[in-house]
Image 1 (cartoon, helix red, strand yellow):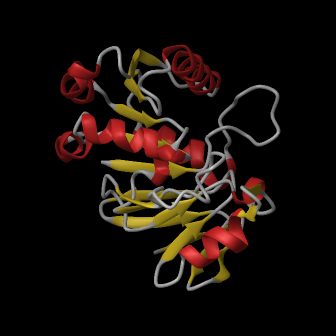
Image 2 (cartoon, rainbow, N blue to C red):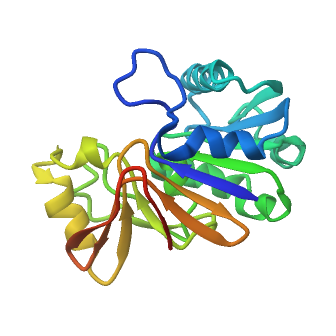
Length: 240
């Protein structure tokens, strides 16, 4: 399996959802996808069919606009969850959509996605929450109102185990955000990193995994023990 764990696949600030070529993303993707390919978009919320269909259509259009062609493009959500094993087996490309991390994590557990991926030999693209849930230990940073102050909210979840990196995406968007009266970085992520390490990057950067090698592509930081340190620059790569 070849993985591209992104913050988001489209270009920041674009009015039209198009694939972001920054840091060699489209070039690398083009080298490993068959033509045409069979794609499966695995949703973030199995019960919100309308929203999932909208994002799946947008993702498909962005790939097609970049010149990729599909023999099929299907969505796996609550409507066909019982077909999960067959759909994954038939796909060349799996896309793990963005959304609410714990909601998606529960769906992945329900369809036993971690087990299904053991025999998957294609390409996997994670987007935001989809990338976060690929970690061995997922950092489910509080996102919705009430989560930051809820003592029962679980910030660390078991993931798909495709990488040991706990990913924190969209840094350029969240670095100054507030939630429940708290700063999401200084008051939440920094303390949560004590005794742990998070891979932090903005849109346009991604983690490329192939043959057991993890390559960080683009601007990124390491947040560990309450300290944020830049480890890679835009246009550069780093083997982790």
